[in-house]
Image (tube, rainbow, N blue to C red; front, side):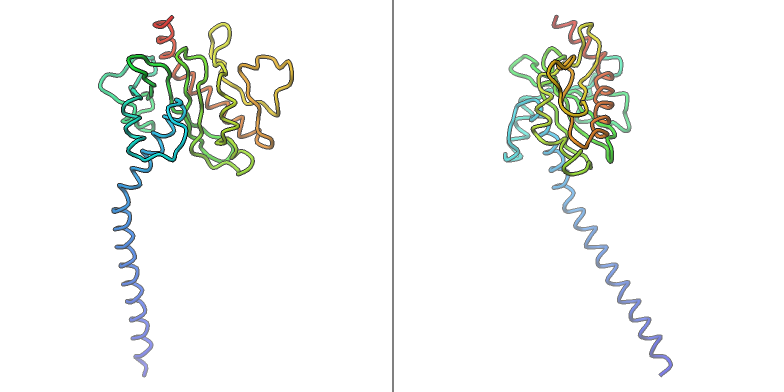
Length: 240
């Protein structure tokens, strides 16, 4: 009789260990089997956002194969360094921003033999999260063609509105250079722009209750544009 508790305890521990082992094997197998699908979904999302901000596609309700084909046929990618020089033999898709912070990926919209717009990644801290997005510039590398924020953890209904079309559309047509040709970026202001607002071409309406989120975006968007400015200057000189 005295040995029964020990047998029960040993059985319970053995059963728990067996269940844990089986669950671990199942989870590991699921992760391995799903990795290819997960990687494809990530690639799809990235390429969709680049195509969207370059105004090459409007809806996400498109087969993955068509997204990939459109990207391959309409987007030229390359890499530049902090001095604005092209890095030979590198593609934007291959750059790891954490491991290679001095390499800057560029995604260009190509219509025939002509580059008609440029897209660059941007990211930084907002209020609660790291926000990731893309900025597209027209051929003049001064006018914003589009902007998207595809990954963030900001408050729904407040800072979380940064990914809404009504907000991102407000950036279209805004200028990043002042009359002296210096980077001033675009500022998300507190509240709405008033009639007669100074320099409206560099400002967009803020989101009510999300001033700190807007401040974070202002800071990292300008930092991104300044990092790419050596390359932008080179291109502007070539096309002027």
